[in-house]
Length: 390
Image (tube, rainbow, N blue to C red; front, side, top):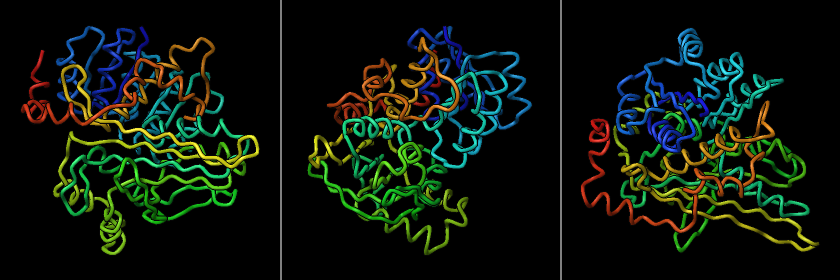
């Protein structure tokens, strides 16, 4: 079995550990600063190849001691972005493969520096955006002789919005604020550029539903650096229901809460509910020349909540965990081997979709599973029931 250490037993880490352990090909250590969180996941699965640990990975000495007493072939960080630099440094010292979910540009630059000359693979940004959207867009880019425009658009949205923000919290609040508040990368007229978040508004219509899209930080990943002047225009924008961006501008810019992010985090978590009834929309559009003609190709997909191991998982959990586990599986099972810094565009979309974990991106999902589970009453307390299982 491949030995994997997963740091963080939260919304995403819990599903990553379950997918890998249930496959039977991975011995998984799931570590969290809250030992009860990790143990709850372990009890629910009841597998001999899944162990729980209490571990504060932000303490370098504690992490070092754990890696010495419990060696692993790879580490997967599902921790907040600001924790990943220390984890990557530990992975380098122990010759481990490294994977994370960060959207933070500076953290990724630090990981790239740490990975220089490494015999193991360092693969940051393995989530949804950056991550899967980069792989999808890159696949389309390879179909063109020359590329004019690349548009990456992703939205993690409630199926049934009913508040002023038209939004529900589906993932890390800190990560959300980070992408709404930090400068954004883009390629403009063949040059790398920095654009402002919450700007660049546009409208997109998919299957009869209208969405707005605007600049947010981090989602472009390393794709812009990979292609540079070979592409005229490249942008990443987050998709929301119309009106959301205006409300966030009020909070972050007019009320200056971008300078007081801890207060903004408390406000959002107190006022905006979480939901398991969400939908993830992935939209990539590439235009350019094919055989001398100007053409456009699109990859559009909607991912809905799914039942896995007897529990309803939200669309953002499924899409994020599926993406990173597919990448982990491709790296760990590779005969030729991966080493050093590996960008997401280094993976083929066809390989991801054909992978046993990437199958959760299959087209044709609906909201029926989440609706039926919620109506039956099984979703409301499933975390408590799941934690008590085993």
